[in-house]
Length: 190
Length: 118
Image (cartoon, rainbow over all chains, first blue to last red; front, top):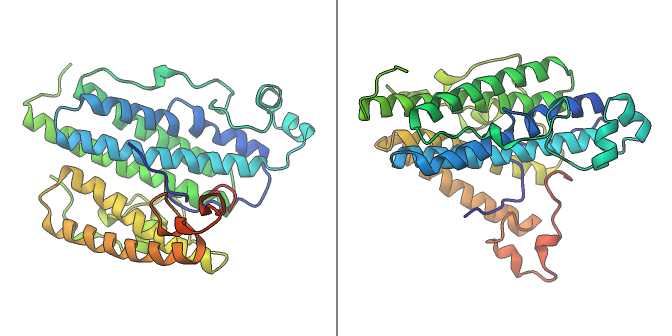
């Protein structure tokens, strides 16, 4: 089960309305390598990890990803606060407004809705962990691109934190995979 | 094969970087300090920091479960966090549904701000 803590993992206080950044940040909300996808991927894959270490790591990283979902949602919500219809339209968020008003909805930066195929799960620990490592790398690149698109320290602080978490998660998945390769004598082969 | 653990950041330095492990840290631009706006935010940042250190050390321990030193440090941080959390909740209301601050009337879970509204 899960228990809620009524705080963010890292503080988010965005004080400026900036709709283009709100739209950009949706990449990490409902995008293929976004935080919802990551949370669901690991929390789904954990049922098929072959031993206790894998079950623990995927549970704990998956849980942390839910805290990252909340940070991204907070940033998007705060960036959109008080936006008029004209402002949303000018930022290319007219379709968002028509279907969802100012509400959060898991789409990517281009407005493509979240889909379950992002939750890559094969039942094979090696295939899953390789895909998890790649997903962390891709998310890191996305955070770097997002950081290049803003000068606001209110956004750069949390984005830099989230980028670094991808680095750490990548490393832990990699260590788990190395450990499993030794434990289960699996060579790097197709 | 795994990190040697003599290489940790102090909790605040690790927290603002998003990484407790110096040898694993990957820099990208500057490091952003956290500037709490009032006393409550300052105490909450201290909890965030301890929470974060536990999260990061916990992931490490998941795959290096025999690291006694790291387990000791984890539990030290966990005890400190428990103490500060209690102190925070006494002044500012519950962070979880397990808080003693929920003895207050009216129901205090509704009283504290949601994290995206702080």
